[in-house]
Image (cartoon, rainbow, N blue to C red; front, side, top):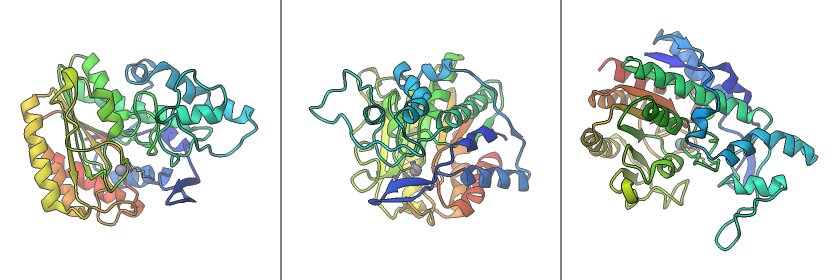
Length: 343
Ligand code: 6XA
Ligand code: ZN
């Protein structure tokens, strides 16, 4: 299985984030991607290739033009306002406040285009996010071209980013961009299975009214865990998308027995959808030693996960999402990919 990764993805290099009521060291850092890449090279799992630049068009198929313009102009606006360093929003257009007209001030724009204060943005964030999306697109094109599978070593991650907002360390929704690209390249149906510890609210919202892209997510119950405001079991899609969204919120502390029971149900639903391609939003944070997760998957469980995914028998694009146990990321990621490839 080939891996797609660009060192340009490392340019987003935040020092701090806001979490647990304090300014803390950032956890979504370049070393995450480097650890995974190094493990792939050490174990000779497969080639690591640079992505091609697909330009803005595939991003515009998923994200709103004004949101993309915000991401692109952010650093100029931020520095023109006399700021330097990392940006965090602090005010949002919640219930009763107006979303239009859009503010002119960068502090207003940060709130307009985000949903949390925990996601640092800097000078090179958009360039790195674009490189990450290009890795997803290049992996999707490999699979569309006949490869059985490919791994997009995406970072920054994508699954919390919606059509017009960022958050959860995500700016461009890499999995959604790949899914839409596959549709545009001729796939009739696609399924996106999100195994990250956190609900993939961005991917869900992008495809919520559509029956061509089935979205499924196995994650910690949003009553207890980020992103808190989406990811419940009764979110099943709307309009044409009714029945094409499936959430599996699990209790904190879930281990492989509980987790894999949800996976079995999800795989049956995927089978019924008969997708041309499966996209796996591969979060590595269900891991028992992840610093921000309360699931209990072991390193061997990631191998089991990969093997179970292979039983779907589908062309598969793996897109990396979260996971912060930096020392174990490479091992767990390659376990999942090798579990799939060797099944
Ligand atoms: C809040 C937690 C953000 C979750 C990021 C993540 N600081 N998403 O791993 O998958
Ligand atoms: Zn996560």
